[in-house]
Each structure stands twice: as structure tokens, then as C-alpha cells.
Image (cartoon, rainbow, N blue to C red; front, top):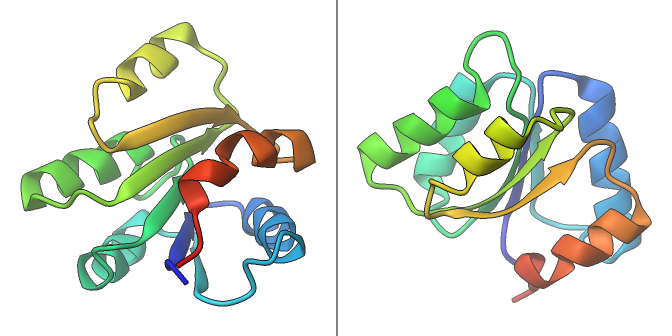
Length: 122
């Protein structure tokens, strides 16, 4: 199964997302992080992973995370999972080639069904 990495500074957001994924059958290879810098180290190891990424985080924002990925030449698939409804953020996210979708938190069943094709199981 393709590894899924959750990156959100709010543990409850990661918990909810993880439970939705588990209920959909993604019960293995889910790792969650509340610190983008630590998550980036894991992403370097798991080049085939899919990342569900928050944008507004204190130590390393989602934007900084994606910029670091670009600078390192990483092409993991990313789904933005953010509370921001800003059209500016949505447009900016589309500038990154590895961003597959932009979903406004919280993740729920209907939003999950929208991103499920990007989370294909191996």
C-alpha cells in the first residue's frame, strides 16, 4: 500500500483524517506528523508517499514544506488539507506541479470520496 503521510500541527486534525482513512480501508502505512520539518525527513525516505498537508503551521508552513520539496527535487503527490478558503491560497497551490487537490478542513466522507482516486492502493 502506498504510504500516506499526514502533516498538520493539530493532532486532532491528524486523528480525524487517520480515522477516515482507516474506515476506508487504509489501515497500514499511515504516518502522522505535527512538525513539518520532521515530516520532510520522512518524505525524503518515502519518495512514493502521498502527503495530506496543512498550510498554516508554526515551525514550517505548508508553503515552506512544498518549497523545500521543490528544492530537493521531490515529487510526492500532495493533497492540501487546510482551513483556508482563500482564493489566493487555492490559486497558489495550483502552481505546484505535485499538488493533486485542495480540500478545506475538516475532512469528511464526501470530501474523502473526492480525493480517494489520488490515494489509490497498491
